[in-house]
Image (cartoon, rainbow, N blue to C red; front, top):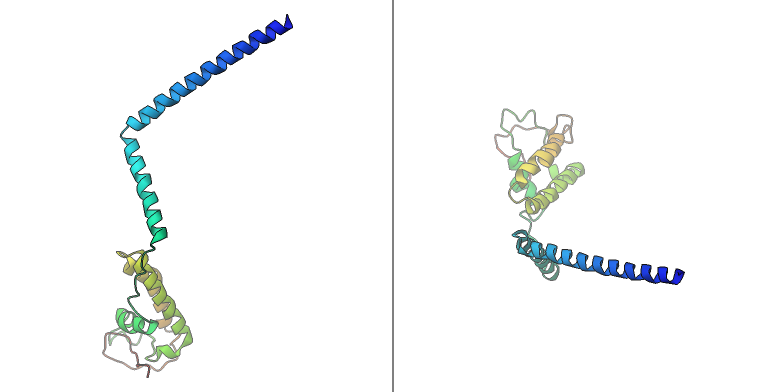
Length: 171
């Protein structure tokens, strides 16, 4: 009798498992058909293909780096920074600056950092790099450099009527 019970139980389990497998397969097929037929599916596949293509292209042919706008920190200072933070005759007493800024290691370090950040932002944020640079980096460091108690506080001041901050060319 025990053998019959086990045989019947085993047959019932096999039938239930077979029926569950069939039901699961049918349901999975219906869900798959619904997904493929939906508007979402082609767009999702297209997006995945485009992303994979871009990754492959980037891996196989890395983009050329954008050349720097300014070739050196000195060019950056002369062509951009000094004109940007220039002062007028009436304000020159407040702006501590040295025409030999390049002879002050602490100033060179800050201006070098500013130049590198400017070039990085120019590539990373082509449309907003200038605002980001001035607000977060340029204004901060130039305020420190030009402060009455800053790096150039002990330098002799002359009143120049020029717009850019003063600079003596490096010979």
